[in-house]
Image 1: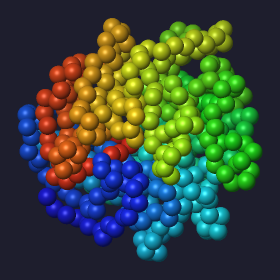
Image 2 (image 1 turned 135 degrees about the horizontal axis):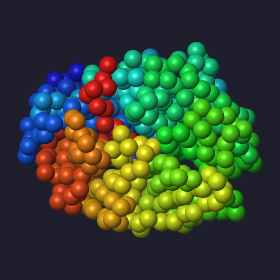
Image 3 (image 1 turned 120 degrees about the vertical axis):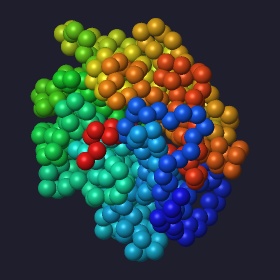
Length: 484
């Protein structure tokens, strides 16, 4: 293992559970070639499993939230039956400014805004864009995004070196939400953003060469806080959900998220290059959704599969107590697999739960994004503790089968990915994998490979990682054939 960069990391956690244990940051970037394995490394996959997540470099200004941590990528590169590991911080503009200042500059998500700062990001323009949330392939590179809207960063898929942000000003777009989508078939990058000032949402498409293919304003009743979107072959699905900042408090710069159960959930279905005038809005039961599983067209219907929260806003008793109680309460995701059917001909909505297990951070074979799929893979979310991915849950919606593998209590898994075999001919022709950090074993981290049709059998191959991998957010499979 070669240490490429090591920093002097001195963090006073002050008892913040999201800076300790499986969440504690690491202090170095490394390269490690030709990792040893317990089991066989498949020689029929070519690409990289890359996971994004927070890894703070400096003492936070106030109460640290995991969305505040500087983005760091961890990569397992598969080629010719061998695996190489490396990790790198995402060299954002905000990180560079703090490195020059020698201290944290921006307040965090749990703090009050500091309007004296010369530059900031997010939907109300007061946060540091750490680009630590999502990651997708785009234009031969990796593209990373930030929770509450920022400017996406392009990185080399082999080296993880940061090339820089996309030229949002030159493209004449605003920002991009945490969850926008790359269509691997067309190469299009389909995105949206949201803001506290009109237009409350924008929507657009970048062509596979990075040029702007389409951009339009989307009318909403007020400032909203959507987290994800979906695509089909012809449409995009945008969300107007009844959990957002209190509109009276936001005028005083107080960002209190509130659930409004008297308002419906609304789903706007728009042609991929359509305008606001082309949207068809569907109403559904009030809810909140963090992450989409997939969407596709079926005759007159558009089907949307999601992880839908059962308790969008934590009850008051869970928010009381220590100064970190709200961090823990909001991280206890109790989502379940849920399906919507929107009839484009009649305007009717049908909805209902597919399964009752606690699941989040879903993934599918990304070549089936926007097309009918039967299999998806999710992180199991144990209840009653801070956000932890405690296992992998596989679903087959054709048979109704649920297939699960649950880790021990102190193991922190990652968002799984599906890695298709070279020349794959079916949806399940490949492997499911996740990183896993074992805090009962001094944080030993491993890469685990699963049979996609037999998750319950557990990992058939375990590949030790030569350093601890803290808890992270989203991941992607970057096919070797798409690397620039």
